[in-house]
Image 1 (spheres, rainbow, N blue to C red):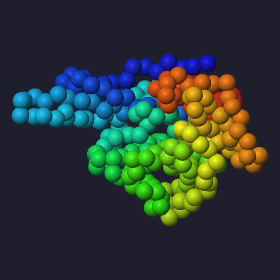
Image 2: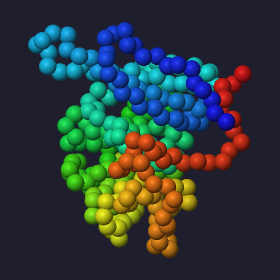
Image 3: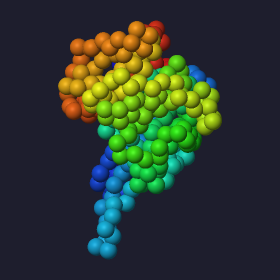
Image 4: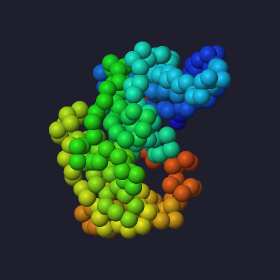
Amino acid sequence: MYSILPPYTILASLGFEGIDLHIRFGYDPETDDYKVVKFSRLFQRPVTALESYFKEWLQVEMYSMRKGSWKLIKDRFPSHVGWISDVAGPTILGSDGHDGHIHWLCGLNGKMTKHAIVAFDLATETFGEIPLPDSIPEYNKDRTKLLGHLSGNLCVMSYMEDGDIEVWVMNEYGVAESWVKHHVFSQFSGNIVPLGFILNKEFLLQGDNNRLALYDQIAAKVKSLEVIATSRFGFDRVKIVSYVDSLVWIAPAS
């Protein structure tokens, strides 16, 4: 079963020509409501010949399954965020959004020299920032960072090609001092891309030839899956999400 959402609003009449959409889904336990958060990065060409840059504007909207409608969010997405890492990457793997917060890994200052996690509170409809562990380098062109969840906690995976994979877990949500390095995977070789932990704590990764595999930490064994990604990193056409059987129907309330 699925539910088709009504059209959302994009203020195209202001002369914006390019649009980047970012959509996330989450559950708000305070109101027992499932919500969709969408923000649009709109690009506007220079008005005069003296302007050599594109103007940008960000519009944030949220859809309530209970109310069956979209609304504009007054709180603005942090203006000092220069880029969002999941533009070309996978949806955050794990249980993002289950506790009323949705997350993005972002680059600050527009120069990719500093990173932070931007969080959106589905109940208060406000944005906040969570710093990364101090031990993770702010910028390294050979080391990539991804967001995920492990045992219900926010985690960051830091890895490099033909190198180790570090997994940092935030034991107390929102507390920067609670970041702890839980895992260091160094037994893999080649172009390995970590995708995150699934519900039984097996580690999902993408290896050579775009094949997906599960790594069992206890048995120290890798099980190849029958799924092959359709691009070099598999991110533009393949999305990885957690699936949980449930009898809850999330259609708008009558």
